[in-house]
Length: 101
Image (tube, rainbow, N blue to C red; front, side):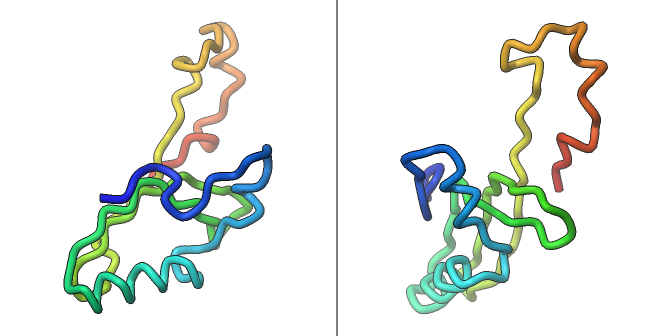
């Protein structure tokens, strides 16, 4: 198991977004190769995933099998009401802002 921000932790706002890649990118390919070569499963805690179909950046948990195949992904969702947002403001939040796949 590799923890949250296993591939990069920025020191300043915006740095994580700047290095985000799609799951087919160079960083993830190296982890897929590592799993294959070591014949181990990997649980990758938080990958800065650049979505291929829109401009969003996701904090994605990735499960990789011992053959280097992505077996599961979970795009973590931040619920606005847990971050101190008043319930009256929830009507302003769009459901599209919390897409999980």
